[in-house]
Image 1 (spheres, rainbow, N blue to C red):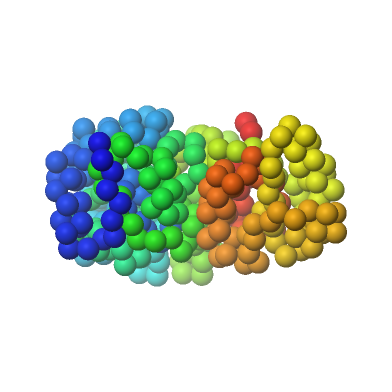
Image 2 (cartoon, protein in one colour):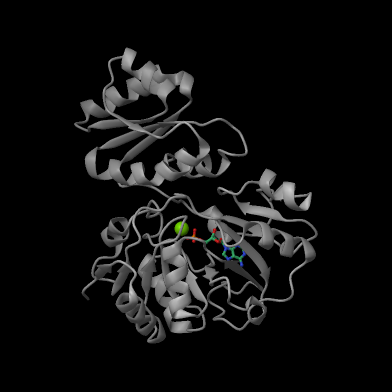
Length: 331
Ligand code: AMP
Ligand code: MG
């Protein structure tokens, strides 16, 4: 199969709609990461997302719709706090887990009675969703376990020859996946951290907690190995630069080249120890989120190993830190 990579325009969006209507897959940009979309109502199309990604069968998908789409056709009437959250954060990088009406393919939710809904805000995502005007089931457009894609090239690298169309909207500004919030209980519960934080949600509706790990897994995807680039990875605390250099030295003896994913502080400390190869993660939670996947993907092409440093244990860094930790763990 030929894989076309093209900017969203009248012609490519009409083609995207044709492909989805026929049960095919289209990759599209959003403000978080690229998604791999199918018509959520088409059982066979949804099944093919799992097949092409190599995605575990119990890891449900998010349904993407444009802001004018009537979601009351898909989910039960949401609670009052959800309406407030939607008013404050949607369109945006947040996903609402709601009680499903069961009208999309049951494969989307992997048999759960809930449905995850997201209304993205980037212009390219909106032009795509408005053009196709249907509920689009989409996980991130990467092979299962691989680092999520933040450019059309990243998507092409994983799915060249396997999907017909990638809409190229440039580099994603958010850089990590949406905040997933269980909105079926009395208060919002964060299942997956993202750029919109628990504090942001509390400021609007008064309450919000992170779902406890260890109990029954509400967001099944969170239990799998994730985000790993195709190179060696490791993570140290910022105070452990000496240990990081020792590991880099070991990897170099094995013939690997090594890059450090740094802040200004860790770069300064590593420079004193003679290191020279750096990727700048950035100095704010927004910059770190935007850059993390981008550099993980760059590292796998340019180096044999990447060494990262842990970020402050604050709510703002929670989303990106969660991703980096998984990308740098070898479990
Ligand atoms: P991905 O887009 O590949 O990052 O995966 C979608 C994420 O949304 C995964 O973490 C899923 O577990 C989560 N998700 C999707 N639908 C539901 C649902 N109905 N209930 C809980 N979590 C969900
Ligand atoms: Mg994913």
